[in-house]
Structure formats: structure tokens, C-alpha cells
Length: 230
Image (cartoon, rainbow, N blue to C red; front, side, top):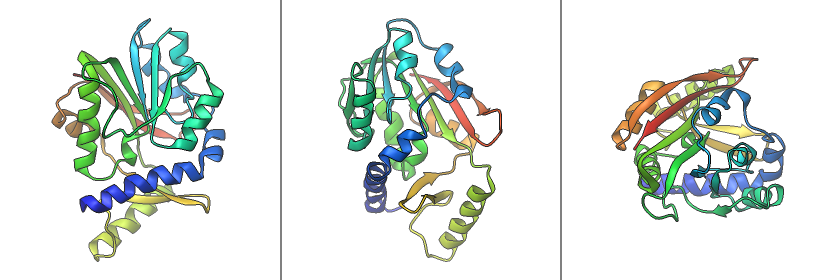
């Protein structure tokens, strides 16, 4: 993917979430229960933690239960407005994941739930991970999830954009798609396999501790999760 197009997609994603902020937030009120173990098993009382791509702050109550020194960052101004309104006691700010406004070795843990699949191009995904590594303390832990495409509509879109790429009609990389959110926006996604995710994280300099798949009880939502150490 051309770097200028990847930069365009980053800005498009920010604007898309500004446009759908209220509706998106109404559908993301609480933690996904199938991911709760990532918080219960790894959070330690009083740690300093970054919620990278925090959205409307829906994970904040889980961090608050553990008396975490919490920082939430997101590129969408409208989403951050909602987070601040819902949880005025939280430290939420607008910022770019590729250029985090924090010093080196600052956090015990970085959480990034359902964010990395919105980052276009391998170059920018590596930069995203290296920035997370930079702000982690030595031995600090990165915990992230990405979507696993499994529904028919996602598989169809993956097939569609693969064909468009093959015939030279798409600037996207292979395994990239646009998925509609109603009639308002077409959100950018990259499809990860577990192997690709693991290799990417290792290339960014992390040591992988755990990688796997979680799904909700109805089976209509699946995510890869990964835990890695700086």
C-alpha cells in the first residue's frame, strides 16, 4: 500500500468514528464478557495502564475496580467527548496511536482492544506496536485483540476486495476490506490470521506469552487475543 493512501485511511477512520460516535457508543456500553479474563488475569492493583484506542471508555470501570492509574487515548474527538461525559473521573485524551504523547518506559501495561485491525499497511501496524513497546516499562505487558472474520458478510467482502486487488481496481492491500456501518460510513479493516498477528508482534520486538481465540456464547463474535512482553 502506498504510504499516502495509508495516511488517508488513518484520517478516514478518525472521521468515520466522529460521524458514528453516538450510535457506535450506544452499541458498546460494556466490556465483552468473553474478554474479561484479559483484565481479571493480568491487571495488578495500582498499576499505570494505557487503554490504547479507548473509544467511549467502556473498559474504564474494570480498570477502576483495580484502582489502576488509567490513561485512555483515542484519535476520535467525538468519541473522547462521550468518554469524558460518561466517566469524568477518567483521564481521557485525543491522540494518535502512531505518535503517543507519553515518555518512554511509562506504563506497566498497554491494552488495545479491537484497534490494530483498523491500522492500514504493515508499516503503520509495526509502528503502532513499536510505539506501544516504547511507552511500556521493561518487562511491561501488551494485551490486544483483533477481529477474526468468520461471518458470511465478512468472507464475502474479503473475496470481493481480493478480486478488486487482483484486477488492479483497489489501492488496498490483500486481506483489507471496507465494511459498511449502516449507510453512513465504510470502515477500514485488515483481516488477521493468528500466525500473521504473532509474527507482526515479534517483529516489533515483543516476546509472545499467550495467543488464542475467544468468542461469545452465540458465536457471532470472534477475536484473536495476544499477550506479549517487552
